[in-house]
Length: 171
Image (cartoon, rainbow, N blue to C red; front, side, top):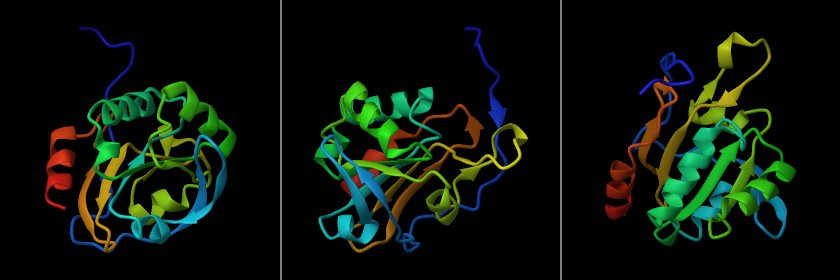
């Protein structure tokens, strides 16, 4: 099969790993009804969280990742929360258009501070001053410990969904 794009190796990432304390943060959390500033710690008080880092809402990796997680019912086992540079307005549209109302929500991280804290920031194509999130999934136990982390090493690359589910089985 011929692709309409090149597969690109990404530079190594110094990202969070299993056993690390998950960096806490506060960002606007967007749901299908509203958005408000929410801390990761507040979500963890309700149980495990799967952070799903995507470049931006319109990028095809986001669509693929959200669809696969929804089809696998991951949101029935943990809180699924997207994180990208997209604005709350874009997130509201994505939640509706992608049918992911059952996810906990999408964090808006336009300056990529959360991506930097998790070691998943990426400078696309060497564009000066532009930072996005590389595709990544991080399973965080209710105690704030990273239980599993997958980070893309190529563009495009998609999570090892079976490994993510196995990590959820261990919680």
